[in-house]
Length: 209
Image (cartoon, rainbow, N blue to C red; front, side):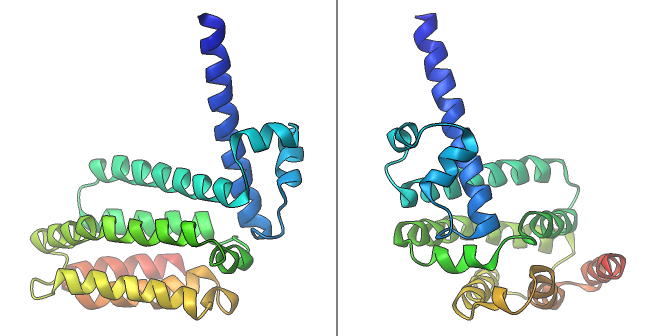
């Protein structure tokens, strides 16, 4: 029984390492540029072993994206539980996203459009997260950082629309991520902030220059 447990533990560990390696390569080189051979070679495993775990590249990409999202959600949830207010969370998420995605090859974003199951998963995620975002805005209103006259549901829809435009216009090919976020996300957030919330954003933005 112990031997079976050890094999199972090793297998799961290997699957996790495959996903981490694959996503890293996809983000570095673009999805289409990375072959299953490249992933197997990077892990020093046979291609047969890789295909036993993931039947094709789309399956691997889907599982990797889902794993990354789960990790990020858990990480941010844990961090948010220790934050005093919504502004701390916003500033942390901004810096976290810059650190995570600023060096991503633009081909990663454009290539992803070729994988419908992945796009559907990401669209479903936005629907799932909408209620959480609405609750976050309401918390900010109660804390005095967001204006109380905003329509929270509409604000979330507008943020999602910005994200869609980012993809369809392929802005990642023209501008770096920090410029995009500072000129869209920060400008939009500044508009819904009270004077108190706006001062915190302004101070943070000056410090980032």
